[in-house]
Length: 403
Image (cartoon, rainbow, N blue to C red; front, side, top):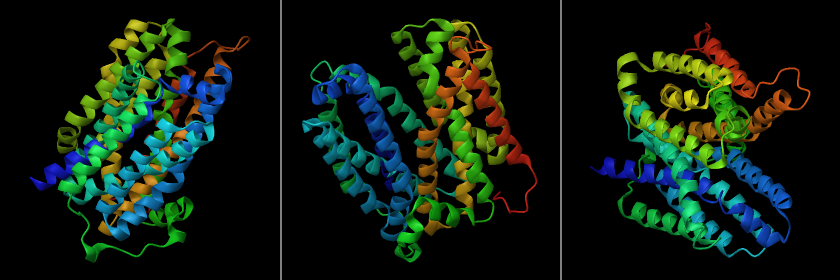
């Protein structure tokens, strides 16, 4: 019962992190115009700065927070981060200048890096054979937040441009109170290890984790997977408009459909799939589904067919939890936080790199005078990246890969 309540708290925390990312999307153009006094184009530039700052802080702070949770335990790190998250949303709600908004987004990026501690907590309270299910539920929580965030933000924006920030702060404080009441510590004192600043920076953390048997190659696979998978949020709105002539609401509906399908897959199919095929085969099947789905979206010309195919594409959502479960097996209990911090940093790095890669590819194949008009080119590139993942996964290795 206690573990069930704790996992509920973890899932709420991850969902709130994800909601917080999407909650502000609908109001940011108006808010940035209000605080800068500029036009929409200038607001868009500042929007890019805020998004990059958020992702950069996740990249830098993921290993730091993961290492802190290995030293002091998961509970204090999670609760302090929720307090920081609530404070930053209040700061953004009250901000009268773009610089305060920037400070708020930096703080929110630091707080969002707690996904590493949350995932490590889930690993702590799950047996190795059930970690894939736990990671799948965390992925489902993140996907649910991805769907709910823009919807809730858009509804609250009718109250006021700052209302979403007050709501996000209130949700973080409510979850903080819930966690303070029910969350036990999951990492025994005997399993904790000293915190070393040198090891907490991203590059040093990558080296430390990469030295664990079987993990070096898997970290590369994880990064490539994240870059390829981020093609959907990176170019879907441009792709839908160029390929199918979709309106803005239609693009929103299509993203919501994908998000709901992904939530269903990660919440309901991860555990039975791993139980039936094992983690390694589940990972391989997921890669193959992704290759098929990305190739389909690269070539399809019917908007109706693209929507109907969405549940099939979402089946590729079995990949990340299976890969996380395999990597978690290779890390000892007192390094789970560090491992999850590294994965959070790699995820943040993909959020920086993938939009640049995918939008540049889209532009090259849709610009006037392009040798081949192909709006789906970014999806074909992502399919090729998935082929690289398969090659790395099945290639012989001298490293001992965890079973």
